[in-house]
Length: 143
Length: 190
Image 1 (cartoon, rainbow over the protein chains, first blue to last red):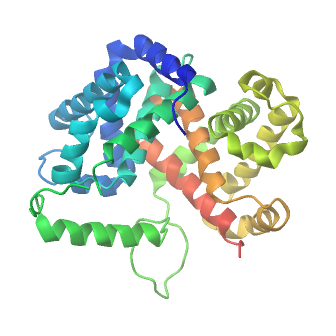
Image 2 (tube, chains in turn brown, yellow; image 1 turned 180 degrees about the vertical axis):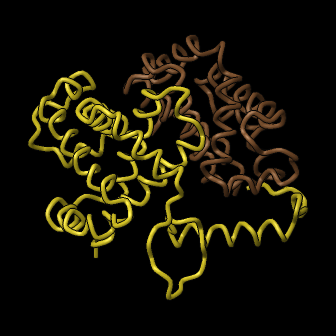
């Protein structure tokens, strides 16, 4: 389900609206994921505090959304944009790709919470497709 | 396909065993607090006080028509292959058409009233939905994976309505409730 030109422009427009809260979205989505999908905590056994709002969760949520924002800016060529991160996830992090879908769901939930008027069904479908494509590119080097 | 050197990540073997166990727990589809034993104890879902109160609270304040309409519309737009079940609904050509379609609105309400049965019978959802499960399988021929898609859309619509009130714990309770409903709806498929 590749991104159409319309999807790309919808996602970029959305990012324009939410850019001031991108860090908050990342922190909230990650924190939420750890609560609602406790199996995802297995990747963070080296953290002291996995509760939503903890310093480590906030920092890492910001890191993740920073990378997502970067991908938005390079949305016409996601495979190259994500090539290094894919290498990292494949060889070092080895996060099961099923979890990309879980995090994407939580990013979407938080975006809907913070921007209910902007997150129409049309915006939702484009963001969903974008995150799916992003996940696909992230898993590119896995095997 | 490239692989780098054969190093284990942090936690090594232990992490993989944990993942395997967790994977098995998920496969068992346990909708209760994650007990792995398949045993002679009751199959009933266990709800905490918080979960019960949360579900009752959300649904008691919900506008079933509006939420039903919005959730079903969102599902048909975001996952267009779900339109296959609504061939006789007329114009579903684009998002605006779907949103404005009175049959979609009416059906959204039907779905939410169906959910209401589970809200009122939280300790017996499986039995409550036995007939509905047969209906969805034998008559409507709905792929059960689609239940999850509609459930996700419902979660998002409720999240948008509750805003900051949709805390992580509330989300967990809501998604657990929907997972139990989906499990019951899928029960009679064969």
